[in-house]
Every structure is written in structure tokens, then in C-alpha cells.
Length: 525
Image (cartoon, rainbow, N blue to C red; front, side, top):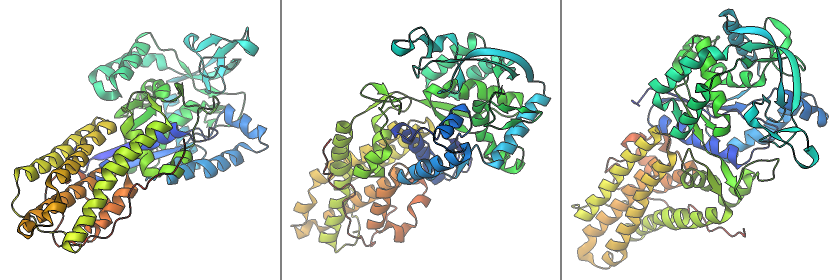
């Protein structure tokens, strides 16, 4: 992607009655890291997240808690969802709620537009519905109940009985878009990533698409169908439209032209909505399809998918209160191949925190700053002539920066971090081999000592820039400690694609004492 181009990226909008668990946090920090990287690369970046607040499930939860649906969603968003973004250091540009007037008005305009273009018709409908999923179920998603639900049809995801609904609904002619979708998947091979997700969607669409019920008439917690106020728009249609309504669809053509189309990052369980229904709706409205949909895997705890109903849900604060937000972000983004399922365990988190963050990166930063302080009075020394060993470090830094940027383009944050980490390992090895503490004892080696410590400090400068989208808090501390904030300006304004160019940290800069970036954690797991 060329610098300065538009990069609009979204999380799914979350269902606020599910208290945030580490799975929600995982998606959000992944999107935030991608957005921060592109922002720092000079791209015209916009990151959207938000909440999906309509539907029958929300109405029932509000009623059970003695509140109106609006009071209920206001409480959930205020108490759980805004604090999540703060806790995880997320720098989103916008937060959309589907109960906001800007969203409701623009949803009506969109649905009216596809109605006027002949893609919506009235029909009768009878099907099994899962309130938990807010979704009508196909044969493949229905199983026979066991135990107390013996003899009933239940949802394969929730294991709860399904409701047989008979309604007069409005339908979207999804079936008409089968060929156009298959054409999209073959002409834009990375429209759906990873490849396993693309193959799954393609084979699903090849089996044939049924028209989609896009309205409900048995309850009123939703956005009214503009030409028939006795119906509300199906919650999933309303939710998908947030990606367009948030950037000015139908109300601010300049903003919409500047931002759209978007990249969507979603959990694989909602891939079909985003890779089949959503592009078809956009085609029906005569709009561009998204730039791409990336489906990440599930987070598993004890082999089970994260879920509040099955008690595998872990609140992000349980991790951040002990390890901090940077460790949370680093762990989930580096330990799991982005796009595949990953397992969470406290033992693995603890071990990686100690080995990679505290002993690897943190210790490297602390001892480099301490040695500059001790041997050069806190002033970054002038390097003398570079040896082969010094130039080898420079090559590692340059290669890592190039490889990390290429990995981010592929949405492989885990591969980007692995590339950047080669700098941590190279610098730790370099310091061990060059023994600055031994050089300091010999006045004849003064120039060599200066070169070694400049090399370590400049390597840390590159690390601070490259890791700032992943770990904004600790890299900011390091940046200030290196004196780089005064010498080079704000960390987040450093052009990230130039981070590998050697020699940016000016000599003569004064370092500041550095408290441990990743303090020892006293905890029992």
C-alpha cells in the first residue's frame, strides 16, 4: 500500500449483553494494531468499533432486568464496552452504536434504496429461530436435544431449543447474487482471508443461496422498515450496515468517498454474514464491496471456544490487572497465528511474559540505558568505525522492518512481531559477545565501547518505533528514556516504514533512567 492511501478497518460491532471476554479483546487489539501501523505509515487511517443493540435477545434481557431496552443498552455500553477500549489501550477513531440517530436514519436510506432497485419483496416465512444467535437456522445448524431438551430441536451452538416462527416478512433477493459473489471470490483472491475461510465460503455459495428474510413483525425493538412501520429491520442487516453508516453513507458523500471501502476483521463464526450477505447487499445498492474480510480463529480455553454461557469467558481485566495492557496485546497477537484457532493458558502467558518481555526486551532496554548512563554520563556516544558485527545488527534491523511491514500487509500480525523480535534476539546476543562491561575497563577500547552502546541504543530506537503499534505504553516509556522524544519528536509520528534506516538517533542525546518496562509479576495461577 502506498503511503497516504486510505485504510479503513473495522472490528465487528459487539453484542453488549455479552460481557466482554478475552475473545472480544483479541479482535479489538488486532484491529487497533493494524490501524496504528497504517496510521504511523502515513496512510489515511480510520478505525471503527461499536455495539449492536437491537433485536429480540436484547429486548428480553432488558425486560428480565426491569429496564427499557434503551436503558439496558446504555448501561451495558457505559459499564463494560467503553472501559474495555481504555483498558486495552485502543485508539479507535469512532464508536458506533446502532441506536444512534445517525445510524438509524442511514439504515432506512439504504434499505429504501435496495427496495427501490427491486431487490426486496414481501413473503411468508416459517423457520426455526435461535434467539441466542438472532438467526434462522439451516438444517446443518440444528441438532436433536438431549437431557431436559430430549425430543426438541436445538441450536448446534447454544444447545438451547429453537422457536418455530411464522411471519409475513420482507425478503432480500440474495439468491440473485450467487454468480456475482463467486466471480468476486475468484477475481479478488484475497477478498476473503485466510485461504481456509475463502474455500469454506466459496463452497457454501456454490450450493446455492436462498433469499434472506430482512424484517421482523413480532416485536418492535429495532429500526422500522421505511415503507412499512409495522416491521422492523432484521438485526443482522441493521448491524452489517454500521460499516457504511459510520462513514457518512447517504449523508456525507465526501466522507464516504474518502473512507469506503473497508477491511473487516471478524471471528470465523460470523464470516458468512460478512463475506456473503454484506457484499450482496452492497452490490444491490450499487456500492463497492469491501476491500476484504479477514476471519480470525477462535480463542480456546481448556479446548472450548470462549463463551460466557459455558463459563469459559475470561474478562480482559483479569489479565491486564496482573500483567498490564501491553503484555495482553503482545501475548494474544504473537502467540496465535492470526487466522487460526489459538489456546489460552495462564501458564503460557506467564512464561512468555517472563522470557520474552521481562528478560528479553525489558532487560535489553534497562541494561543499555544503564550502561550509557554509567560509562558515558548518560549521553549517547558517537560510533567509531563499524565492524562486521555492528553491520550484521544493522542488516537485522533493516530486514526486520521490511519483513514486518510485508506481514502487516498480509494481516499476519504474529509474523510481523516475530520479524521484529529478531532485533531483540540479535541485540541481546551482540551485547553478550561484545561485553561492553569489559571494554569499559580498558581506555584503549573507549571508541569501541561507544560504537557498541550506540549500536544497542539505535537498535532500541528502531524497536520502539516498530513495536509501538503492538505495545504503545512500554514503547513510549522507552522512547522517552532514550531521549528520542526531545531529539526526534513524538513516537507515534515516526514513519514506521523508515524505522529500519540506520543512524536516526542523534549522538549527544541525553538518556533518562528507565524503570523496568515489564516488572516481575508476583502471582499464582
